[in-house]
Length: 466
Image (cartoon, rainbow, N blue to C red; front, side):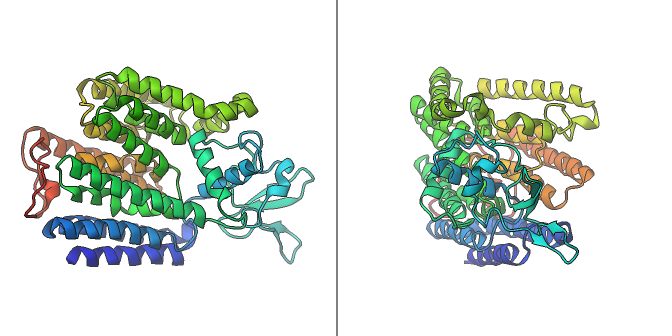
């Protein structure tokens, strides 16, 4: 099958990228850019070719491809982010009986917990200057003035992550030796990403829809890179949010709320999945989510108090959200404070529309709009935030929204401000054109592919002859 050949090519490109390019540095941006573009082109080709395969054969490629791409992605250490070093440290600290919100990694009180792979020894050069070689390492000064090295970013501040994530880090690190480096979180990221693939396939089949839509998650280059290689915890939030949507769509609103609360307590941004599930008996979802969120925080609040906020306020300031400067599109027209107000008004308005018009038994399209629009307006620097969007693109079939994760991924290797702004505008244009055509009831033709079908209720039924 031609699609399997393309997936094998994706696996090869992923393995080369992870094992040969090293940690993202300015000198390697060209290599990363070529790899990124190649993977997204191959991904698009694979998705189109799957239309020509029988459904059973296509599902074999989708599931096996999800596993193989993840396997290739685990073949080297993180290559665009150092966040998983913090995840590992938080788990190590908790397994020692200490709250991760109580101390920063640089605090000498925790010096005895420092493994060498997270805190490598500094190097003294011929001139007697102490430094931390390699793009992955950060230098910091101890209380006595000496220089130490670490792979953990923001080493002087406590953790930012909510309790579901912290519990997950503790469980993962408790199961492996302290000198196990990045692979435990990469492996669990692989398991969760494949779990979402299987959940999508099952969910689509249960509703009588074409399960090949799961390829939009399973074979997406962003999934292998950010769920596995860089082990971002957003994949856990995506898994829980998707499970919550499935529960609510089947009428289990209490269970959906519990899952949603756990998802929000993993990374906060899964709250964006909530509005599309609230129109009918939404109070059950909200109450269960709030209760779950609160219960998960209880053990940490008991030991750390208001310190559980960690570095969140500082992070929002650092990223420019409190001043409005982070909103790339809005600040082209408005000063920062005004951009912040307009962004808030837009997001509240979109949430209101999503609540009003989404069917909780089919919340996917509303979730795509809410999450995707937020990513466009907020324009984060980090592509892994889009992991939350991808499962709902697969469930809704709103393939045009793939432009958003692509633009965010491109921004990592082409970080110029103007490039980011223009690519975001191009994404908006694509989404708008396709959405207008779909609203008019027209078929959106792509070459011989099921992703060109109009997204009416009768258009996603399984084609047994496909």
